[in-house]
Structures are given as structure tokens and as C-alpha cells.
Image (cartoon, rainbow, N blue to C red; front, side, top):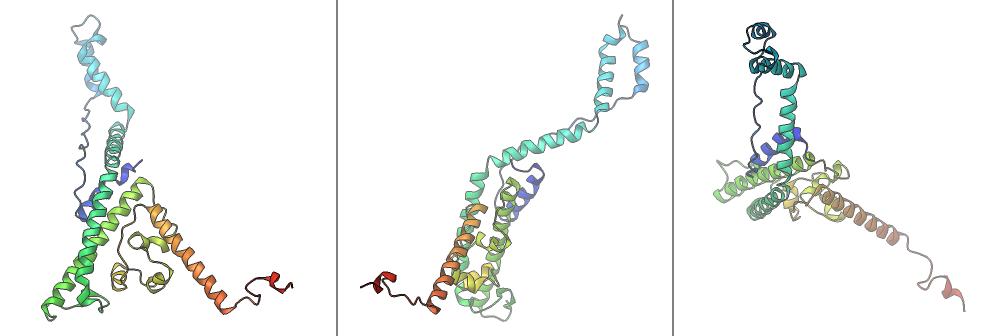
Length: 252
């Protein structure tokens, strides 16, 4: 179940990413209880009921005093309301993920198109908007904004999955595979600076993973690809001395 304590974080992250969060039923306020034992004796002795303890006024005060004695009832109510909101938010998970995926794809496509004139620049934010050529300045501005948007979308994606309790990336080294899926050779060029911008500069497609498990699978696939490549390299440096047909070819 989605962590009730993280509902607010998920909602804020979605808004920061430009995603309109689902409308959740608001938390209902807990009525304040005001009762004092000092008023109870007078209510009892002045009651017009034959049995003053059956007097609704007496019962009302006694009930309030009892509820007050339970303690933290308002906090319990608040936690219950958070759980209700969490369940409601979780029911929208599929739709939210589709929104994040669509927004990511649209932003990534625009970013790649805007990046062409400035791919040689290590950091688009260093381009001076006042002195650069208009097309260069426009590209730099669009790229910088696009990167920020993608970062916000990725954060919202991670916050949602984290709240659900699924964040198995394999390890932190695999986290960049949230937004790209390079093979071993491509990863070798990106591993020291695995950022969105470096991926774009290297021509690596930007693709948002379906889930943290998908991130882990991407990373493990790259590691397997890397091991296969290393094994092939070792074999090429130390070729087998056996004939192609194996030991059997020695037998006449």
C-alpha cells in the first residue's frame, strides 16, 4: 500500500513536474471536544429527570469526558484520513504513470531536437543568453528547461514508486537506467557522467523505465552485455591452441 506519510510528497512532486495530481477527497476535520468535570455535579443535582443519569445533558457531558480520556483520538482520525487518501491516490497509479511517460517522451523528443546546435557544449547553462547567437541562445534555453523538466518528471516517478514501496534499482549505480538503456559500450562512455545531457550528446535515446524493477533489468542486462564483451576480449587475446574440431581432430 502507498505510504500514507508520503502522499503530500508525491502530490507536490507531480505538481512540480507539471502533472496535475488526482483530486483527493480532503481530510475531514476532527470536531473539537470541550467538556469539564466541574459542570457535571450541577447538571446531575439540578436535573429534572427522576434518574438524573438518564438526562441527555448529563449523558452528553459524560460522553465528552470519556472521549477526552481516550487520548490522541484526533491523531488517530488524522492517520485514518491519510490512509484513505493514500489508498485513493494509489488507485490512480496507472493513470499517473501514463501521464509521466507521455510527458517524458514529449519533453525528451523536444530536447533532442533543440540540442543539435549545441551538442558540443558541455553545459548548456554556461551559454550566455546576452552574447550568444539567437539560435544558439534559444537552443540553450530550451535545452536547459527541458533537462529541468525531465529531472522533475524522474523525481515524481521515483517519489511515486518509493511511496508504493518499490524502489529496487539493484543499486545506486543503476539509477541512471531510469531514463536511458545503454549497452555496455555506450555505458562505458557515460558511466563517469551519466546525466541526461551527456546521454543526449552521446546519441543515447532517453526512455523512462516502466518501474524500478525495469530499471534493475536494464542495468543487469548491461552488466551481462559487459561480461560477454570482456569474455570475448579475453578470448581474442588468448586464442585456444586446440584445432577447430577439438581433441578429436588429432585422432586419425
